[in-house]
Amino acid sequence: MKFLKILLAIIVVLAIIIIGGSFLLPKSYIVSRSTVINAADSVIYKNIADYNEFYKWNVWSKMDPQAKVTITGTIATPGHLYQWNGEKSGNGQMKINKVDVNKMVDMELKFIKPMESVADTRFDITKETNGNKVIWTMSGESKGIINKWFGLFMDKMIGKDFEDGLKSLKEKSEKGV
Image: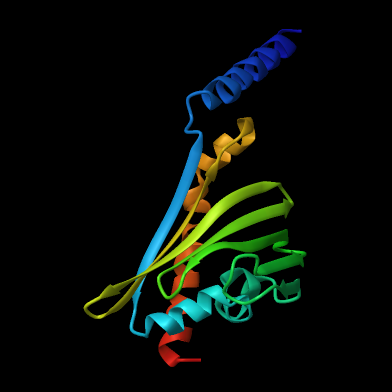
């Protein structure tokens, strides 16, 4: 009986920490990485804003090459859509919301499975003396207890994927492919 009381006390304390702690966590998250690419801004922009090219350097398509990918809409314009359904990468879509040709691509990233969430994903391209700086940023709202805890670790969870993706974008853009 004493064991059950201790176990119940531990469960209650953990619940209080998890639920109560969530009220103290940020309501949003942001992940950002950047690199300098020695290629024309128009080449970099095309590799981002044309989902047929995005697919070739995107780290998640390399992780799950068997995923079913559908690309629709007019390339590099609002409404251009990239949808995927894979065993490893889950199910989701990216849709271009806004563009500033050769400077910025803003997308809505929607994950459907394994867990629903929506994020704003943005690529900014700015001239540097030795090329073009590309900043890849993802931000979103952390709604609910579980998502707030996930938001706390979002940078650690996907930051490396952003770094690997930018490395692939750099290689592809600098080769001019």
